[in-house]
Image (cartoon, rainbow, N blue to C red; front, side):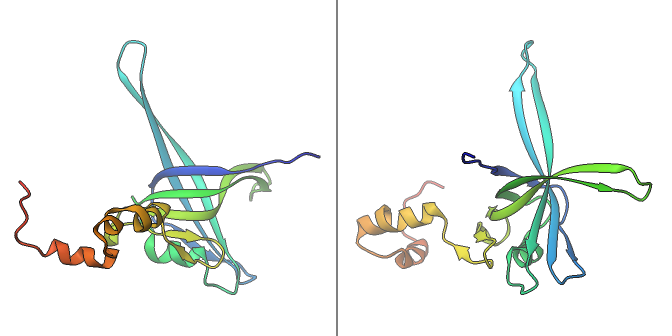
Length: 168
């Protein structure tokens, strides 16, 4: 059998605060809905928009220290997120013995885009370790800090300069 790939990448906004639960086995799970939107101009020139809602699920092992803890502490309704995961289809029997189906994104990586605290962070599901965003890594080696001959740590001092000639 050949290779296969099941990967979903989404950028969207949370519709409500994440719901955090614990299983009887001691694992923790966070679930939330992520809205993605697209817009286009119709044949008669009027703007149209469509929003899709994606059910997202994040799992922790019972040892803790994972992505669910990050979601619980930092992610709130309205936040803009980039998520990566895999699409999972499930079915179950409800209380009336009807077969129900659901499609979920099983989240493996999460990046908070903007919001509180002055920016985002990148978190992985392998223990909730925080990674520096790729743009920050690139800027550290080839950005203005390197051209000026100083480190990025010198930058905050430049903000205190009252002698700037900016027109705003």
